[in-house]
Length: 142
Image 1 (tube, rainbow, N blue to C red):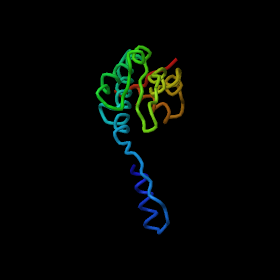
Image 2: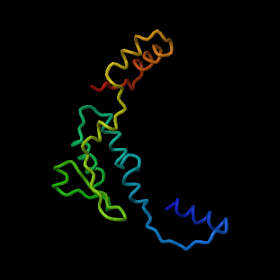
Image 3: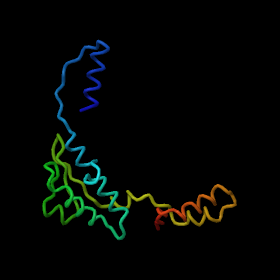
Image 4: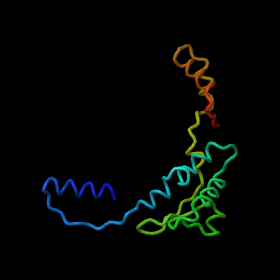
């Protein structure tokens, strides 16, 4: 909505002729996806930080967090498959949670840490030391 309003204001400011277009306000849907602590992205980030999380545990956490939102839909069949839907202005869009956890993790490829540690370039070996001492030590993917 903001983008459309800004464009319309700019057209008026520049004296460009245009006809008003009514458009739906999608803020509630954006909040479902992006809201801190309860939005789907926040749930995904939290699930990626916790140990032994799967796409299925992510889908369950999304359901637990979002089931009261009028734009969130997950039938029992969808829940059993690890999917859910968001009601967008043009209709329901179903999301399959398969791969969400893996795709969202910022993991270093296997061997990267060893490669940095063994580097003769001071900057790279220092980076390895920083990563090792960091509380957010990198996960290594296979």
